[in-house]
Image 1: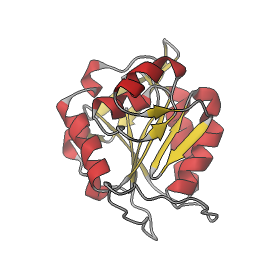
Image 2: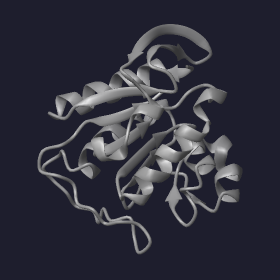
Image 3: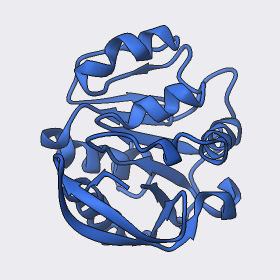
Amino acid sequence: EGVEQAEVAALREAIRNSGAQAELIAPKRGIVQAYRGLAPSGVFLAERAIAEVSPAEYDALVLPGAAQLPPALIDDATVALLQSFRTEGKALAALGNGPLLLARADVVKGRSLTSSPALRSELCNAGALWVDQEVHVDGRLVTARRLEDLPAFCAMILDVFAWAPDLSYDFSWGEDWSTASAPARPAPVAEVC
């Protein structure tokens, strides 16, 4: 609930146009209310609940932004899923206030990232190095600041997730994270709403 409609729609389109699959997951399976800012503006269908999925089923996880993060999204199942993605060396991407979920799951310590500027203090308090960039890549972690950065964010996640032909970055998670390489044939990408 509360996900930014334009972000989910653009991310799904970019992922699917690359030849990969995208699957929407949420705290509960079913209808997810999307917003434009604070105003309701449409719905999406969450194919699966967060508690039903495993990182082994996906190549990456993308966190679109939302005007407000719903309390149901900051639960034990979401935290466990994000921690499992990190532990397994899977790619993570977050836009806007999506990095706040990463901080609450304790997966940003020692990582550099960007986000909505309003989250800078909270992310730094969680051990992240915050940078003010349109899109920022730190290993297999891709972050962007806001809705206006969406085109660059979509292009970068396709590159980092290895679904674009020109790879020019080191995508490992670093010493304490797995360095699993991207598969030749992508598995679905989970979008959390």
